[in-house]
Each structure stands twice: as structure tokens, then as C-alpha cells.
Amino acid sequence: MEKYKVILDVDTGTDDAVAILMAMAAEEIDLLGICSVNGNRNVELTTDNTLRVVDFVGKGDEVKVYKGCALPLVCTLNKDRRPLIPYGDKYFDGQENHGNHLDLPETSLQPQDKCAVSYYIDTLMASEGDITIVAVGPLTNLAVAMRAEPRICSKIKEIMIMGAGLEEGNSGPLQRAEFNFWADPEAAEIVLQSGCKLTIVPLDVTHKTGIKLKEAQAFEDSGTKAGYAAATFIKRRIKNYSNFQHNWHIGEETAAVHDALCIAGLLDRSVFTKVVNCNMHMDYSGGTADGVSVVSFKPVTRDLDGIFRPAVKNVDLVMEADREKFAAIMHELVTK
Image (tube, rainbow, N blue to C red; front, side):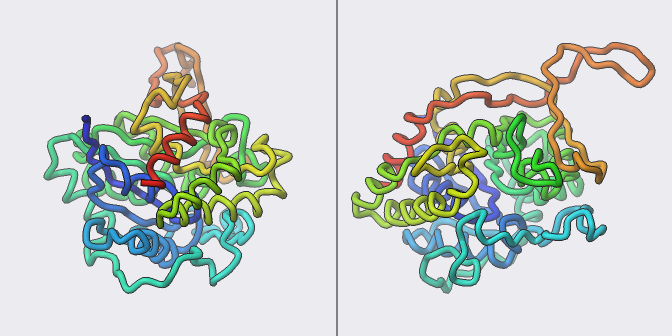
């Protein structure tokens, strides 16, 4: 059995929480640590939510949590550019109760003294290049670590990212940007230019691979703590996404559980049924397309001087995924 050394990078809301539950349950994953970051909520809340998930399933002695960056790199310097960061739309992520905490018991667990950026640098520099990073929030922690110690890029086996959107969007003035990239587009661009092996799971795919209410109920009926928690989060998402589903093709009594798809795809690549190698960069201009991912599938690019050059295909972009296989993997992991 292939074993994956994994660091999770999360802005823990309900879908991150399901991804964490799956990663902790998977025998194939050696979960080295979890890094929190500002995103769905401020970093204090995303850190506490992460600790609550870890504690709820009794993994506090095994899984260490490192608190990460409290703000994006630069986009909040102009308050007109990102007035809602830290993000606080209580209906979007399904955390409208309990002061934006996840609906789990309070925890006495604390994050590690070392911050997420230092943890990345120390852990990766001491590694043999065999660590996979699954990043399902804004990419601020990784970008800062890459800027502070560029050599870590050659030490990363792969970065699997939930981010970007082609036709689908949920953020920005035109609702064309995907939230994780929109929340810190400069950080996303740093990671996209890093030279690391990147697999991108975009909003277009996660919206088409939602988990159904009856599947969530089966998780709860299993009697496991992870199954109960996953079902609670997914049911809340189904309820609170109902106002958006007609635009996002998610389906009735169904919720996208974006971040969890990355864990399923890491464990079984056949979950990703169509993957295209292409060029991706960010618009971080501050205009109406700010935070939008710009994708080209063409074999060449044209410089400002008019010269055509071979395109740098820097990402493997997931275009289609097997919803039923994803749901089956989630069921297997949270009902163990």
C-alpha cells in the first residue's frame, strides 16, 4: 500500500472539516500536520475549528495543528478591494450558529507554538522530497514560505489545490472568481509560478460532484463520530446552499463538499476522470476580474513583443470527476 506523507492547509469551515476527517481516517495517509489560514473565517476561528475536528474524533495526541497567516499578502491594504476579508458571509459556508464555530464541542486543544510558515520551511527542508501538500484554503501560508525559503519548492512532491474556476465562480464583483484564489490572488500566483507539481481541483468540478442527503444520512447512521460530524456538516451545507443551487448546478438535496474531493482524488486518482495539462495564472490587477484564474490550453503563448513561444504548462487541471466514486470513498472513510 502506497503511503502519502501529507500536510493539510485549511481555512476550516464545513467542507474543510470533512476533508480533515477523511485524511485522518485514511490508512494510506501519514498526516504530518495541519496548517490553518485566514479564509472562510479569521485565522483564530479556522484554527479553533480545526482543533475541534481533531479533538472530536480523538486524534489530539496524533495530529498537530499550526496556526498560519492572519491576512492575505497585500489585497487587504486597499479596503475597497477586499472589504469582507476576513470573510464573514454566514450563509455561504453553513456556519450561521455558535459564533461562526463549527457545530462541535469546544476543545482544550491548542495549536503548536511554531507558526505554519516556519513549520513548512523546517519540515520540507528536512524532508526527502516526499511530502504532498493538500491546500484547500487561500494559499498565503505556502506563498510566504516559498518567498522566505525558495528551496522548499524542490522539496515538495506535489501540491493538490482546491481552487480556481473556469465557468463557475463564487467571489468577486462579477462572481467569476473562486473564493480561495480570490481571497489572496498574489499568493495563488506565487504558488502557480513555483515550479512545483500542481494539481488543481476547480469549482466547476466540485459543483458537479456533490454529496446527496441520503448519502449523508448513511454516514450518520453508521454510528461513528466521523460519520456523525460529516453528516452534520453536509446537511448544514445542503440547507444553506439552497439559495445558490439553481445557479451552480449542484442538484436538489445535494451539497458541494469542495475540499473533500482533493482527499478522494489523492487516494484514488481514478476519481479524476479527465485531467488536462495547461497554463494557469492569476489576475491580481485589482479590477473587476481581480482574483480570476486565467487558463490557456494553447500550445504557444505570444509575448508583448509579438514573438510566439511554447506555453509553460504549469498545472494539471481536473476537468471531470466521478461523483459516485467520490461519495463511496467518503463513506468508507467516515464510517470506519
